[in-house]
Image 1 (cartoon, rainbow, N blue to C red):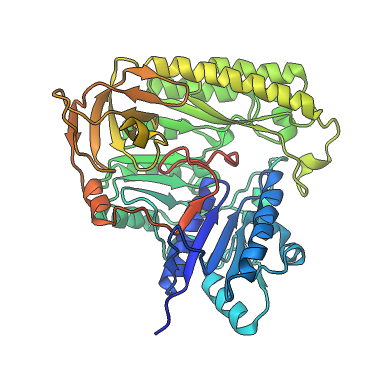
Image 2 (cartoon, rainbow, N blue to C red; image 1 turned 30 degrees about the horizontal axis):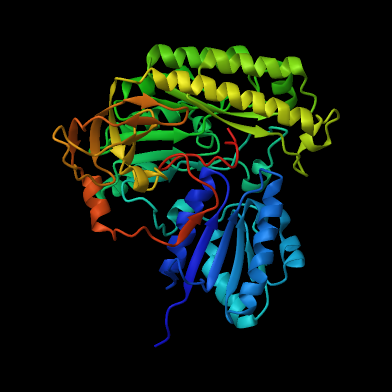
Length: 493
């Protein structure tokens, strides 16, 4: 009997791609493939690509160029390219990299195993790009990276027409799942030991547009509050123009909905927002922030900001800095504007000089860091409850610390010892209470003794898995949480 073929999935881009890669992994394992060990070359390498940033193309073709020589040394090896860049470039990929075996789009990830087999049997590249969804992706097999936290898609696609964003053209119009299907999936995940879910959509707060219920998202949050055993509910990403007070009320009044909000600003200038075709202005954005903080005083608010959009003046940029100061973001994912062919912004006049863009980017990043540090310093001396996470503290092995996420999603590195200095055994998914001893811009540290430990079903689920993290999915960039947005691409809300 022949050995099963091995695979590796390399993921780039946003949280939607990360979740899609869990499905690709599930599909491959369902078809009999096994994850390649870290020290061995996989028989099948799948790239799940992003098209939001300009360097996405260069990154992909650079990686494909490297694999050309690797493939020559490994007879039978296959390379597949999927995701947003595949949806955009289509046959360009096989023209530029004829050693690629399969190209598939955002609407037909379920076809990957069949396309791989067809490419093997016919000995020629298979390119299949669908223009619309055939099957809602959540019906596909999924291999989750985490035993204790899970993504749950509530919609796919986007109906907005932001001039800088290519995503709607690649993922299509918004399609919503029925609430019963979403809740059934969450209940099944909880039964497996998951205690935290993140509701996922390109624009979660327009959820319900397909079945005519403008209040559907707030109702969905409240329904999540009725699921026994579900301890933490998060969501990403909403759009300011559609963010309504019923959602704020649902967040504040549903105990397991976490006091965390990722609200993409993109720019603080009303003129730039108009040019971006963002249907809100600075006053509305700040009004939402104020109402959220009134209902949830300790909510952590994060955002996305683009610097150097065509026509942005120094005055426009100062307006963005003003919003950062007023909004007091816990963190902001900042990006230099990247021209994307196929978007209206690519043809706008007054493209900003790259040196000016870089200068503004650095100034914005410095202010974001200053504000984030000041916000984090308010936690010094406070006790926080953490869900212990896995793989988020890059220096944990050196410092002998563990890491976890607070309810507001702040990352906390803590020393797992009790008052006597004895090491406390905790598992990813378990819950600990610690006292914050000092703050940094992007994390908190708790070097005082652990105050309490609660062993959880999520920790049991993690323990039931192999202690070695599954090798099947490698992320192209570091994550910002488990699960949480990746910092390579702005959320498209």
